[in-house]
Length: 206
Image (cartoon, rainbow, N blue to C red; front, side, top):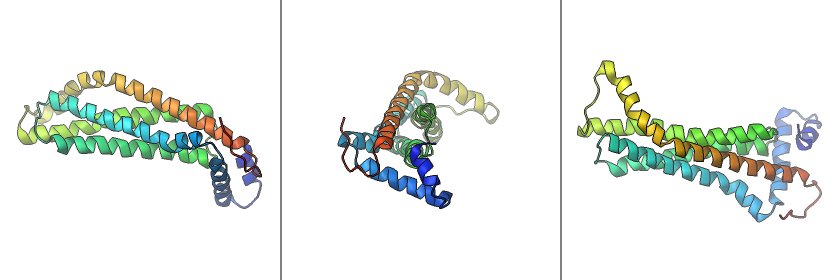
């Protein structure tokens, strides 16, 4: 446990109060960082989420081509961009940002793994899983492609998705790398915050 978390827990005020004290101390330290560090910490997840939204559009395009869907372009594109964006931003905040600011995430390896997983799941796997039912519904509605029989549905969708998943490998890799990079930068900023004395009001600049 970090010095910040230790000092808060030593107050014997209870776990709930200690967590609130840690967050308050970290927030004050955060405000003393340079503008570059604050912007990276605050807006970095937005870029990761933006990439997830782009991945959603790519997955949507692949499925539309595979199913010969030409109708409902805006109807399918909007949720495929917005939902991965919101999901990735929420996942990163819940698993990386908030635990760092509350002093609960002190393991650098854990931070990197979480960042990579958020990038892959929110910006790769989720868009693929979302694009399939969206475009399958459109294909069924407009009869743009033959639909599978009930007993053969699973094999049909697996065979349809396999080449699309292969095409998405590059996107998955990029999201994993970006998530890892972003979480590593956030952990570096977290270490900078820990080095700021509580009584020091001087900003730290790179």
